Length: 328
Image (tube, rainbow, N blue to C red; front, side, top):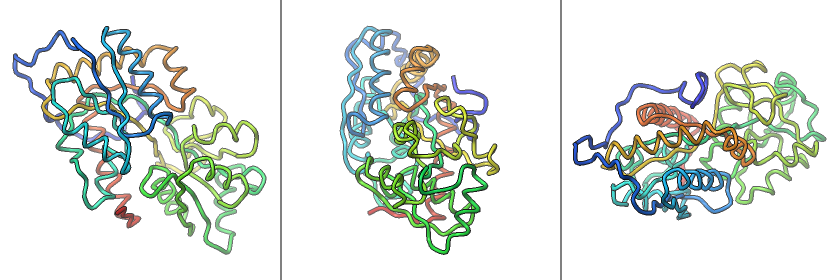
């Protein structure tokens, strides 16, 4: 379901690990009882909403409940550990994100789970766009070249925000300031609405953050979207150019979610889930619901997902090391 220029364009070769292919693992009857989806983040967040939509659709298609179980805390590590320690029988699905599956291992000195060893990827489930936002009232820039010129003309260190150290907006901001050559200080926030309001007021200079977080104030004209850090224009912001179109090549910084299983889960189950998500993601009604919640429905085979995750793991490791980011 992912387009030619979509998320999987970053993939590198890596075989899928942890799949049992023996004849005894052929479980054509899966699922025969309720399946839990372990989500390491809080109810109501965009990832949670998208995962619940998929759970509803999977239940309709497969005839068994797919129940979201939110196990929050420690940047997603608590829920990730629960998923990693679950029985590899196909009845515990891990609702992973870019952070828990590819970034956190580079940020934390110690994790209670090993993303590469403890999980076998099944399919990507959603992608989101990060976008350069500025205050419509306090910042004169309307294009990327204008923003770069404005930023370089300031005789001070600029500020940008995120939901916390090591999050995708933090790393995207670090990458952005390095690419355009400006001094900028990261300001982490615990509360999402406050960082948006501070950007509107001019207390913050810019943000490279998820589109869904800023949609309401963008529609009110209080914020301005300069360019999206995606390979293609984002469906809900068709008038906003990509970074490449705006003049900054090779700056694609998506956010994404994926389904994975504990290592050792039978290969047919891993593949069956991916196949079901492919069908669901192709439904225009589901696509509309995903976009309304801040993401785009996507899918991939287990092999494609493993290659993509491996590439992302390498990519973000390099970003974290270059920015010298560490979370204790």
